[in-house]
Length: 211
Ligand code: GRF
Image 1 (tube, rainbow, N blue to C red):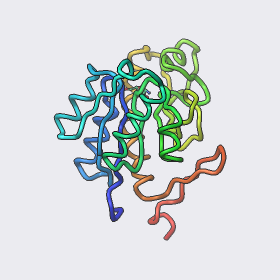
Image 2 (cartoon, rainbow, N blue to C red):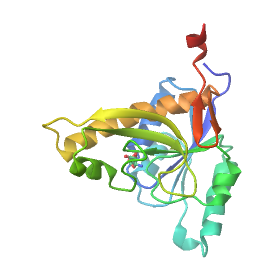
Image 3 (tube, rainbow, N blue to C red):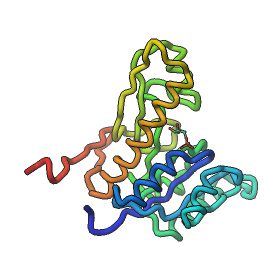
């Protein structure tokens, strides 16, 4: 276990089931993480309620209240800084982040995507993979940058598409894997094992595996 908990700021837009998985893993002390703040661009995001229920500061940053994308991103950055966040985890945050946030947290902003990148980028990737007929898809956690679903890949887990799967059953499988993988990756950060060189993210072995 790490000496100090990693303070994570989670960015959401919607239901927040990944957020919930992180909150639960932190609550159960499975990961050395404290969710320091949850920020949503949508006031009605269910994830904000989940945060409040767990006594986590929940912040709605309204894009329409900001004249520019710059000032909107500054507001997000200020909320993250105010809550002394070490790492920013996008979990269903459906917008790009501006350089105001990315530069404030170099190599410290990550995202989860429900496909094996670089295949099936975009907001309908589960559906797209199913319709394409691939036999294997999965989940990717990657560093975020100024493009959608780009940035060095940190971790991936595969999900097989069975003959009897429907898009709904595939969605359920993918989300179950997401809810395992995201807390695991946060723990890798908490243990200081993640680094990045250019396009390549590297994970140092777990201390127990090197003995
Ligand atoms: C997840 O599938 C995530 O991979 C994608 O958006 C979805 C968010 O779901 N980026 P939730 O809000 O965590 O339930």
